[in-house]
Length: 66
Image (cartoon, rainbow, N blue to C red; front, top):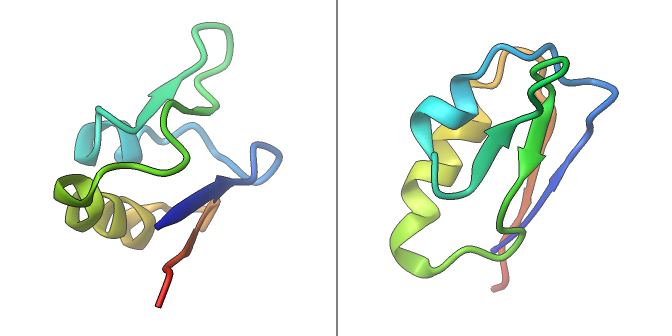
């Protein structure tokens, strides 16, 4: 799995951080998403998928190897 985020699209809702805190964080100054791990380990994939689904601005894009 590879993750990309669109910082310009991010509305700083924080849903991703609450859902997958090992993969996402927020910038202190404006709350915009920070991607901590663009290729997370397999045990984090379900949480990352959920984070992408609940993102209110659809700023998270996933590419799954397959």
